[in-house]
Length: 133
Ligand code: TYD
Image (cartoon, rainbow, N blue to C red; front, side, top):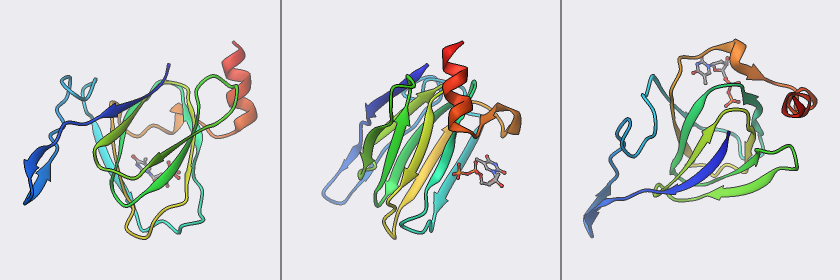
């Protein structure tokens, strides 16, 4: 349970770059779902939830945004994403909020499970309670 920042290897030269993502190689799970988030108003706060079991691999492929992650119920840590060469790997019950979106921000998310509403904790107090168990 927790999160990790991963530096991604890119291939390319002055003409452009390419980053491959492969299940069970540089992405540490079987990928069942991919989604992307774009066009978010800069002051809107997304997320505001944790997941019980889900594993996610999150990359800001364009622009920038700020992630606030709480993995230990001791407070939210800020991680600014502004490069397609960095991923956040999140496993299990980690509270996440993201905000401060640039106009061109596109966030790519890979996940190891299909969408499942029952895997969400949407209340921060409930998340804290859950972490005590
Ligand atoms: P939500 O999880 O609330 O987005 P965020 O945490 O980024 O603010 O999802 C927004 C909407 O999209 C909600 O109606 C559920 C739907 N949704 C899916 O149908 N499939 C998915 O894989 C995800 C992540 C969301």
